[in-house]
Length: 422
Image 1: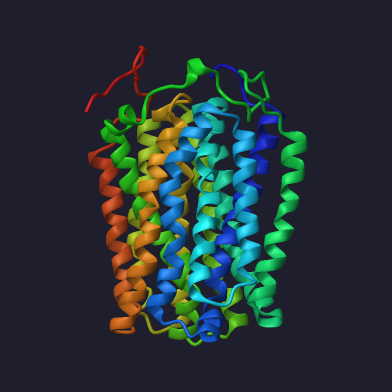
Image 2: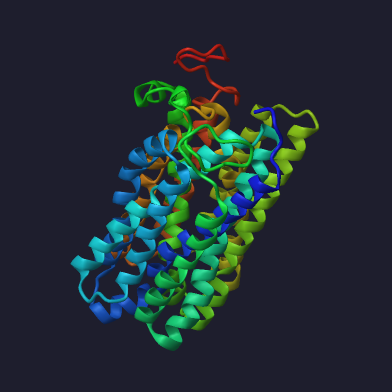
C-alpha cells in the first residue's frame, strides 16, 4: 500500500471500534446474567457451560463463509447484514424461557457476529501500512475489551435493578442505532474503491488465492493455534469470571459488576500499549518479525504465568489483581496478532485467512466454557480451570516460535513476493 491513511480511513476504524464494542457487549450479556438465569431456569453448571459454548459453534463455522464473502463483495453491506442479525438475536433472548430456544438464539448470534473480524482484517490489510497497522488493530481490539467491561459493569448493575430480560431487550434494540452512521457515512460499492472508500468490494482481479492455497501454509496453522489459546483463555474469563466471583469468592452482583470489570479495562490499556509500542518500534527500524513476535510471545507467556494461581490465592483482592495483570499481558498479544495475519496474508487473502484462523481459533471458545462447566460439575473448584488456561497459553506461545517464520507478505499464485513454502 502506497498511500497513507487519511481521516476517512480512521473514521471507519472508529466505527469498527464501536461495532466491536457492541459485539462483545452482546455476547457477554449471558455471562453477566448467568447466576440469575441459572437460578431462574434451574440450569446445572454443565448446561450453563453448554449455553456459553453454543455461540461459538456457529461463530466458528460461519467464519469460513464470512471470510470468502468479504474478499469478494462489499464489506459495507456484508457487515450491515451480520450486525442486524446479531442485534435482533440479542433482543430476542430476553423473550425466551427454556434452554432449547436459548441455545438456538445463541447460534443465530454466532452467525451474525462471524462477519466482524474477517471484515476488519480485509479493511485494514487493504488500507493500512505495516507501521500503522498495530495502532489500527489495537483500537479495534480495545472495543473487544471495553465491551465486556461495560457488559459486566453496567450490565451487572442493570440486572440487579431491572432483571436480565430487560437488559437483553434494551441492548439488542438500542444497538441498532450504530447502523445509521455506518450506512450514511461509509461508502461502499462493487468496484475498486477510490481513496477513503474502505468498505467497497475488491475487483475480480483481487479475488486472490483459494482456501486450499491458504490452508497449505504452515503460518496459518501457527497463527490459528495462537488464536485458539487466546480464545480458550479469553472466553473462559468472559464466560466464567462473573460466576467465579459470585460463587467462589462470595461477591454480590454489584461488587462483581465493579471489580469483575477491572481486568477488561486493564486489558484495553495493554492492547493500546502493545499496538502503539510495536508500531513505534517498527517505525524506528525494528524488524516486523522481531517486533510482532516479541509482543505476541511475551504476552501469552506473561498471561500464563499470572493466570495459573488465580484460584489458589486466599485473598480475593490479590486474585482480582492477578486476573487483571494476566489480561494486561494478553492485551500485548491481541493488539499484534491480527497485524501479523494481515501482513502475511495481504489484501488478497486477508478475509479468507482471517476466516479460517478465527474459525479454528474460536474453537477455544467452544472448548473452554464447556470444559470448565464439566470441571465444576466434577469437583466444584476453579483451580484446575485456571491452570488449564495457563497451559493452553504456553502452547499458543510455542506455535509462534515453531510454525510462524518471517512476518512479511507471503507469495500467492501469480505473485512475485517472498515465499516460504511449507
